[in-house]
Image 1 (cartoon, rainbow, N blue to C red):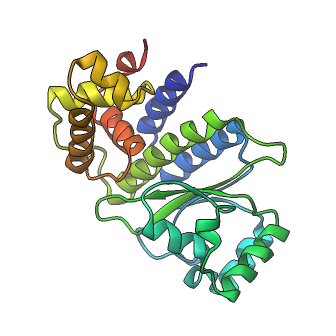
Image 2 (tube, rainbow, N blue to C red):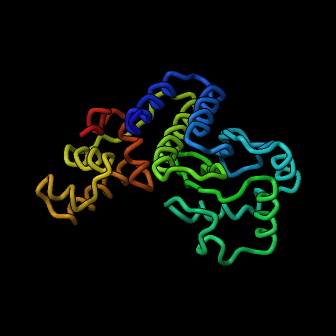
Length: 245
């Protein structure tokens, strides 16, 4: 199944679900298929004692979760800290992530690695009126296809937004309407086109493409292009047909 079709199928299935539990199970199944045995799509809170409104879709070793909660590691978690500062996904092996970590944070990462939580890839997630959150994916030891990270990113953003809606008791997110040019640019972004290619296709400057996409991101209240594409799909601003050549 093509990535765009797989994403659209996931979106349609999740929109039909009416509980966060069912949504979480669907998301975790997709992550298993993509090669991520351990997953945390979660608000930045204690995983065992989350506050009201927190999202906790978690598949980590139970012993690690119990230790994490007992030691209040959510208060020092370097992944949470980095996700709060960054807009783009990051890998835990990156030097920019490791630089400046406190001894207690390095110890936490070492303990997590011994439990199998290592070599992670984290997607910062922000939503209106939502607790700070992120999605951390732990790949199979044999590695994961690079395209699976992109697909998992889009699914995580949508799953978080859908869970937020369900928790809030709202089935439809209030999303500002995009202009025709913003829809054109986002549809091409969703197809993997660069700003240069989009500028050639639409006969506008590369700078105009970038400004249009950034304006669409601000209008939709998101931090990344992937998040903008997911929100646009969810709101019906672009469709599956826009994602096919």
